[in-house]
Length: 391
Image: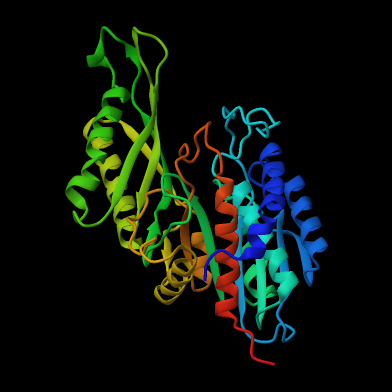
């Protein structure tokens, strides 16, 4: 089950689509041009149904198999949005939009799923239905949830759903996956500390929120070192500490912000509970007041066992023996495909992007050599999951 010859032949055409998306990046739910281009291409392929405006700017395409679509339905998802980053690649197809860039490879994800849709529409070598999902706002906007809330899983009764993401540093042609948690929950916190401001030369007459905040930064790290089981993963990072604006004034207020990353619901609950206790008790100890806002973001991205085994087998058919890591370490980054995996069984896989700059880096660029590999993965997944019966 190597690279599909027809998809290798289409690679140059798909690359043109990818670079067009790259030149015209759109962030969050602003993916209007991208969605229009995707819908236009899907219609030109002759897919059976194209629906726009799902989850604000998402696009859904339906491709029915040789039996008219009777039977199971498999969903394949690609994200479309870019990031608010100034590009520094100097590529001839670099972003034309100042301050916006496809720095995570969503242009490539979209192009590869379009390539698979073109092939599947031509061949129809499967029974059942394929739903190709083009999603906005993965980068912090929960576009997957917006599409689900708009009826993605019920309007098109999807039985299983699969996602794929490129992986810089892994050779092109290799894949990685794992059962269970593969990416973390992404929660955000904001701590507002109110003390009593005053002259820096008279600290005894103040309640210094800088001292209170500094103690909180230190003690919050004990959630990982002293509250969590050493075998459980949790990251608590304070990334913002704002207080005061003069060298000789103890400020009235301080602000801490940051993120918590976990790989299980139990650890997520524990982290929030301990943060509440720590913030409250430290503030009380200093006679200050503190308010914690803990905002839950994307849930844990957890692959389902059977679908993970299936996806790995498909990937091995494309890549060959020894080229699929079935137990990659979980990553503490987040992914809103997690919402889809909460709704339906499925699996999220990484595909090697070669020796390129890392994700979200201004010099990152999607490796076009991945295109026939990723397209072949999608096609073989469909043809194996929904095999066509002999005539």
